[in-house]
Length: 151
Image (cartoon, rainbow, N blue to C red; front, side):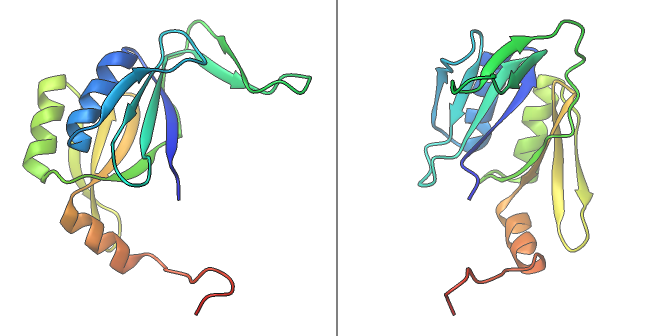
């Protein structure tokens, strides 16, 4: 179970607020570890959330026993290979309307057995959003393994 992930965006608070709309509710709070960061909590039973950091934020391990540290690198374009597939309760037209309003690229694309809505936050960070039907197709397509010790 992935509970949260973090991505770089130009306007962290705004991106977090848009994700609340895509999640169908929840709450946005400042994200304490790094100034200017915000987290969108979906309010679901799994604690699903997305952390939005300013473009150029880097997380790195310190040389001692402290927690992860942050720094800013100027000149970053914000593109990243990090992405996530997230199920939403919205239908395709609703997601595409949000994307159009925000000026973000979004289109429905096949992924071999299921479709996704490829949504590009700030047109630099990709999320694969799945409607309820897409989620059902995804779950019917991907290998479902039983955890060790269960039958």
